[in-house]
Amino acid sequence: MARIYLLTLSFLLLLPFFIAQDAEAQSTRYELLPSPDLWYNDVDGIRVGLRLKGQVPGTFEDGPHRLDAGVWLGLWFPKVPVSYYMSFTEPIQSWSEYGSEASIQFISSIRTGYHNHGVGFSKRWQQGFDERRYREAEIYNSFEKRFDHEYTPFPLLWSDQDKFLTSASFEIQDDHSLGWYTIRADASMQYLEEAFSLAAITAHQRTDLHEFWGIRLRVFAGISSSNTTPEYLFSRSIRPAAQWMGNGFTRAKGTIPTSWMHSGNIQVAGGANVRGYTNRDIDSFKPCQNGEADGGCSTEPFLFNNVLALNAEFDYWNPVAVAFNKIPYISEFLSFRSYLFFDTGTSFETTVNDTSTSFSNAGAGFSLSLNIPDYHGKPRGFVLRYEIPFWLSDPGDEDSFKLRHLMGFGAVISF
Image (cartoon, rainbow, N blue to C red):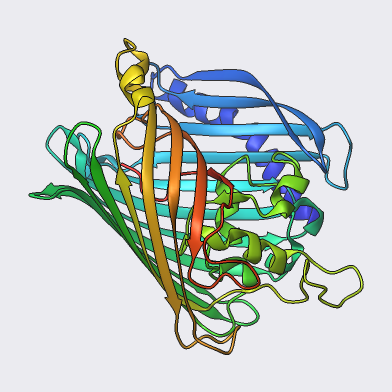
């Protein structure tokens, strides 16, 4: 691991020099835009570093030689105090046109106790100048490994297995008579040690009935083989642990206080997303100190190899949303929603948990979102939610009707 770490870190430090030399040889100016970065987690402590953006001037993240990199030092000096991330994207000009780029991307990262090194190819097809209507395909080959479990709030959700994955995805977004829809399909195969495979499909539909009234629907189906490691398996309420690595707030424990995560009142959107079961799922993720379950911890996380779920939200008028819409310029990026929700799901042919089961909930929620779209018009920001799942079909030792409180990160149904 140390050899890989030193080689990739050296490559990261030298890459801007090679890019600049190549640009100079082609008589093309190139700019490197540094910026300071400060973050926190419970292992690195305060993490100080430098972010680096590289681009041909005037291309605004849409030109050749795109670089996104960062190097950080953890001031609590853990086992691996220096961490880094590097992404380099090069368009394939002969296969690209406006809004319909083909590109190859190299990624290397060692941070928060996790390896991710890989190369991917992506192709986008956009309908004219309308960035909302597109098709995208991607294939990515990567080496991934969790080498330090201290960073994760739920070690039971992670293996330390070396993984070489081939992942493919296809996404389509368009509209029809009922409104906008998105369909995304993902599939992955892992080849090292115990091989496994998994696949998921997600479909969204948004139907606006009026300016502040509407219906949002989501269908999710996931399936995986019997040897799938726990970070890729499905829970009832939150996204698989491997997907937590894509967000700085959930990448390592402590950025969101660990006590909050262990309380079961924090929900990370994704997966089956039957959100009212977050508290009980989190209890099964917490390891027991004495090796035996005592009702507030577990020796085995409650996960499924296969799951099918439906999420529905009904937006309704609220005065805060009206006030936000009246703020000049700010209303383009900041929005507030109030909604009723219903989630239902079922597992089938499970191998981690022996019995099939179904689970549903209903409640009300509010969300605040800040969205600054990227150059393809895709969401780039954050969503904070406060939700009250007041009914559960399987409440366990509780009443079916009860006020339960959740704070959520991310929107499971977003457009």
